[in-house]
Length: 263
Length: 71
Image 1 (tube, rainbow over the protein chains, first blue to last red):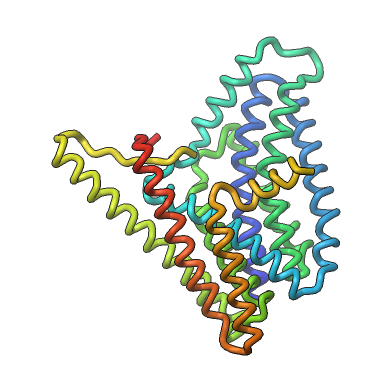
Image 2 (image 1 turned 180 degrees about the vertical axis):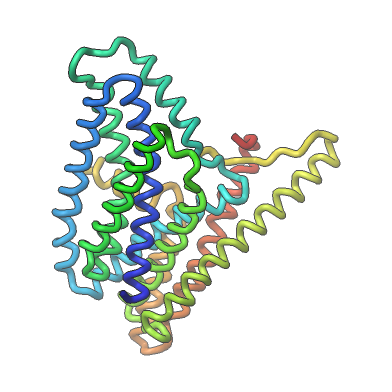
């Protein structure tokens, strides 16, 4: 396996695992509260829809000339990755609320109970919420599978990596019979943001006609470089926030509080 | 169709169009230099660090303006 293929498999696995954990919380909440069969029907329908999207768009993307593919898809992957990375940096710096699976489970359970009486047989609410949850979380994974897979003409490898991640999360969920609150989601999202940004940058520049020193081996410098830059930003934000909090406390005499952006 | 395009835009670009524009301009500069021909690989790493830092700074300032407390 080349470094790019390892990066592909790892990125897709981490992204898929973290999204699957979030989808599992939604399915567990509506399944336990309303109807397991309807919730699982929603999961099945969303999985089929996602598989159809990957099956339809995959061959279309890989049919594009490699230069065009790398420029367009690399650019899109970079834009998408920078979004992930910015949010991860803000979370790590304490400026954005971290995703809490137990809290998400509680909210979904309360919402499912508030809907009203359960229907005998098929439960439309459980089906719809499960379908929507799995589809929305899965779309990000489908995007990553398609962009990473198409750029290296290894969509089956990307799809296999995603499948392994989903199966592991399902197995862990069945064993725990609860939301997977101990999975280090925010660390995983940080890693995915670094990988998406690094590979997007690498492929985008290649598609634009640039030659990287060392070709594919340049990734061994790009990935740590992006990781280092992101960590420096976290450190700088924490420092600035702490200094602002100390200054505010000195002025008002109140306990410092960190500002956050909404999730 | 309009809704679909809006959905795709929201999904890929999100709430920070400036970063998307910056990436597009950096790729265009890379293509321009590569066609010259001149070394062009350095453009994207530099652009990514600058764009990410600016994007994070905008978000941090927005958080400070909102003044919300940590959840």
